[in-house]
Image 1: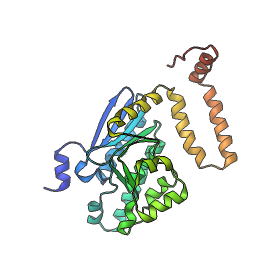
Image 2: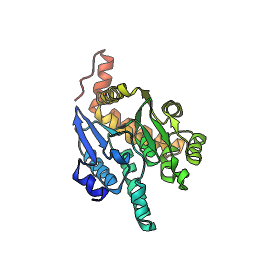
Image 3: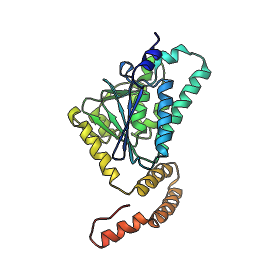
Image 4: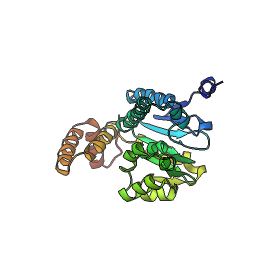
Amino acid sequence: MSQAAVENSAEPILLRQQSDGVHTLTLNRPRQYNALSREMLSSLQSALDEIARDPEVRVVVLAGSGPAFCAGHDLKEMRGRPDKAFQKELFEQCSRMMLSLTRLPQPVIARVHGTATAAGCQLVATCDLAVASRGARFATSGINLGLFCSTPAVALSRNVARKHALEMLVTGDFIDADAALARGLVNRVVTEAEIDRAVAELAATICAKPAVAVRAGKEMFYKQLELGLADAYAYASEVMACNMMTEEACEGIDAFLQKRAPAWR
């Protein structure tokens, strides 16, 4: 029986769970260290497209089952189709999924344990926030196989300083969780026993904020990064003026002035 058949006869390769406004997506190819096969990319894309339309979802958590968060692309699948057309379509498919994470209205938290390598490290960098266990390790290790991690470089270079990013890309060396925290790749580092609680607390903090402000804020954050300084301020001013017109902003300001807790819708 083929590997794909074995996977299809068992659990889904992407597990989904929703509770209290938090939708958890768990990569579920533990024997393959959650490698991003075409099927996995398609499953993630479908889930993200659905979540984007669901107002009940306030936060998304991206996790991995088994010993690793994500080992990157499925190298066996890639070598099985060596033609350029297949390779280009695969990386375009992956890039569409990564862009969907950024464009998703809801903030996405990566729950990182074990290793996050190549496109797995790209996943961490692409998620809006990341909580890592103390034993997590990160690398853009394609260079060790003769393959520069070009697509992971896009996300990595937008998270960490250029010299740190290029060092990871040209050496393929691992960095530990503390180094990832110091360089800005993750937000928090906790013990393995604490990671679920830390992720839940961060998600709950976001869920407690007004949804309209969070959604508009995430969109604004990424758009202004691609603008020049003057254009960024002009765009931010427009977004802020529109935000001031919302019921949530009016209620929040009134509650602050009246020294009471806001009553969000």
